[in-house]
Length: 245
Length: 337
Image 1 (cartoon, rainbow over the protein chains, first blue to last red):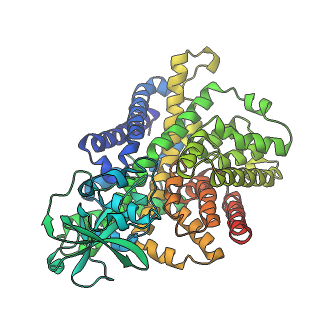
Image 2 (cartoon, rainbow over the protein chains, first blue to last red):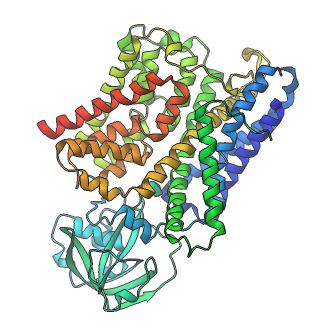
Image 3 (cartoon, chains in turn blue, cyan):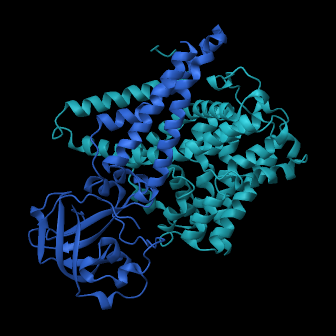
């Protein structure tokens, strides 16, 4: 393969990776994979890849001056490297993307005690009105070290997916969300127990909104908030399925 | 496009892995989801985790290769050799602190280290840089401080990283001939890109040339990112984290578990402090410290990238020495503090 074709092939793959990132960014799917706080990094990546593609396209002018058999050999060897960088593109195209769900929660485990302290919104969970707190806020209240007594009996209104934890009786399930600090590799599931007499009718991974007074319970020896559900309704999957500490 | 030649076993394995991936993808998309629910769910989790690591790490890899390209074009060949101190210990110390000027994480250090070696950086300094730069740099110091505060976790993380990097650098300085350590490079990055002597090139030409060098480095290292991310995602999809955490009690096992987790998760050193924060309640100070010290030096991606640059035995030392020293550091804290 000549140097010219090699460079153009490189440019093509770099451009493909660039548009892959751009597509994820513009379609909003980026939030399925990484904490959107790091979106500026992705923008940086898009810019660098675009510049790289441009440099590679413009490069091969002086090409045929230095072409010997030795160099051809080198190009053959590194064609492999070119192909491997296609794999992420293949995976996006071939495997339909949807956010981590209950099946992922069952392998990764339900994290009832994660002391997520996060850098932002340290006090949000205490100040926010009870019905605007999300699952992460409630978990933080229960893990803050002081007893959650003042918050018991308040009405919670949270959205999450259904996870039937094998440790729970038939009239209970967990309303769960994944928390992502950096990217999907560090996702951990958190959740609140819901007591509801029709629990068993709920399908695993279905998105629901739950409303009801909060009580304290225990799961695996850890304190965990429990909602005595007054209302459970199916909802659309929220545009941002994960929570970010 | 030509079919690549299948010469050595490693590249054959790469091709097989990809073919397997494509096959799995085709199988999945051609069978109704109801027929393969278990595999389908797992595959989708795998894809999400894989793309998560890949998309998060890609900009950092690009930063490293950009730095490498700029060093190639703008740093003259003997400048580094001239400014680095002669003795092995001062050289290793300089190398370890070089990360303060090049703020990159572990995906970027490998290509940059290789470039610095080619620019005459002594072996001990290069190895110390390779191991220390992912932690001893402004971004990581800031993110660790954000997560843990300006306290003892930050202090000991920096201290042990420096200590380990310098000691391993010193151990490597015993070897005088760099050819015994480094693999001979057999890829396209050796090509003269523009046939004009560097001194006669305009600034723009130099920039363009540094871009081409970066691109070659990017292709050279990018495949290990792809491979490392897929192995980490596979392990995460099929091995429940809970089993690992359930095993992790006791002063010795907990350190080992946290170090295993550091390798398994393969997360970038710029954000691993936030992840470590999640383990503070469950694990002792020493175990979390060993996670923060060992993770940036060795994980699945970096082991694969090491193999591209170094010969087999040096790779073994680069993994084993930091492993043992981080283990000792974690144990020391679990037993004595």
